Amino acid sequence: MGWGRMFLLGNIGQQLDIEDQRKEIESLKGKLQSAGSSEDVDLLQLHRENAELRMYLAALVRYLIVKEIINPKEFRILVDQIDREDGLHDGGFSGDVV
Image 1 (cartoon, rainbow, N blue to C red):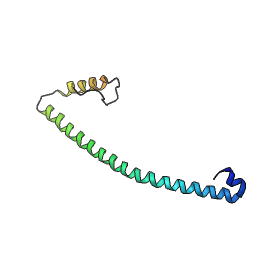
Image 2: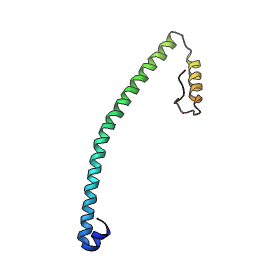
Image 3: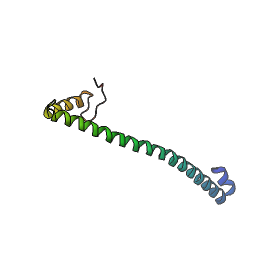
Image 4: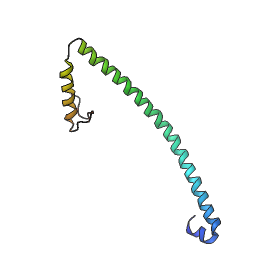
């Protein structure tokens, strides 16, 4: 493969190099697809679990509001404060829960 083959065999050597590269690309594509499908399944599972957790959290917060245990405005203020605690106001939190 490479300059030696092209120098000695000319166009035929170049075609052999191209064929070797094509085979290598196809092999890598196959490996990527088989690994990707497993990751896709994992990602889909994470999306489902996240949606379920969001549903339970929404139900819990709404229940607490209906029972007048928490005030919606005060709750939003608290959520905003917690969001800023990790240094980013991005709708996420990476600090300690308690």
